[in-house]
Length: 208
Image 1 (tube, rainbow, N blue to C red):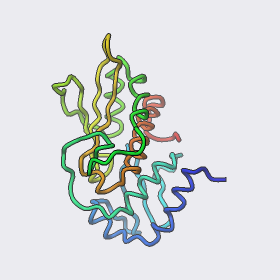
Image 2: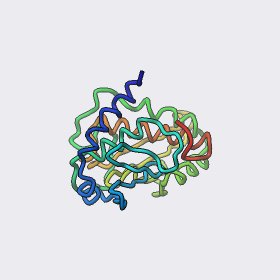
Image 3: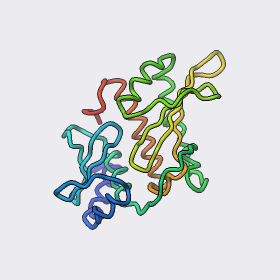
Image 4: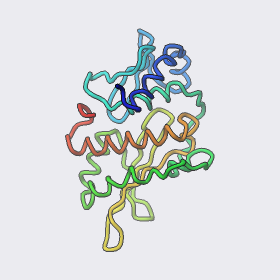
């Protein structure tokens, strides 16, 4: 029996079969392949999006939530450009909060990268992140284009005697034009998993 997450993805495949990929490519800035499929980079991996579903072009295992995020993104009707201003995921867009607090998803990152900014930096580079300077608050800011039109700011804070190491994930204010709030939470979970597994394996592929 399929898991709940697998069922979510499977329910989206029939909708992809009705998708106008040329329109999607032009609106979202994706690459359209000669066979009519879309090509997109997501968290350090290339994916093909077609009427049959979504798959990584490297043929290696992938977590099903990555596929769901890409399906929702392809099916969205979002238009516009990033605001280049960043807020927590529960404030992206209209300011309506998620029904649940998603901070628990990023908590493991503080433990993994505690007193190890060098490994954090290496992981961010592998996932396509770009260093954006040190903030007045003391955090080290990195920018990541999770998907065309959806930008993220990942901030690393060193721990001290009073506070532990913390990694914050912020979303461009216009991200909710392209993914609904629940889908942004899915995306945040995909990012956290990618950071953890890339750190553990040294690679952006081959793990679930």
